[in-house]
Length: 226
Image 1: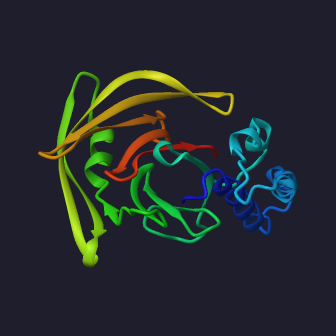
Image 2: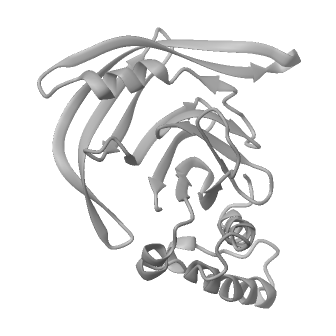
């Protein structure tokens, strides 16, 4: 994931090219020629191509291909990832150079291809809390995260969490407002403390989130584009 904005470029190419066989008329495919031109004409081995400057609302509205946008502030990464077209546990989102993010109804489950991967995270407690908690209530539970550290050892990080409803609001993604309910998940143990934020549509679809990945990478923002 060290490729910075280049990941965004190759990811869009990967997703759109692989989806073209099932939907040859998808207007999102028109962006491929633009990105290829940018890459070809750039003298920079890692051209800075921000996908938010290339993809338009019109492209998203005319497409049916599942797509998310991720941002990793500590690594200056912004990238688009497409849904792996096979049945898996949860959703696996791929980008072209081999990295991936796995989610469970929008909750971060795992990553692969980052310098410090999240092997797995239990998402069940958070899912239950999001589906149960009401305004004015606090839902308390325990979560755990698994990493692999030196000498191929497992590291399990366990935290105590509380989730509550912040407010009914809206989020803007590519010039469209989505009505959502905003939640805050505050977690801590003796060594760390962090807050996850979820913007969830009333249908239950996770439209946007800011989630803790680990002490090395910090937070990942995930936006559901399609």
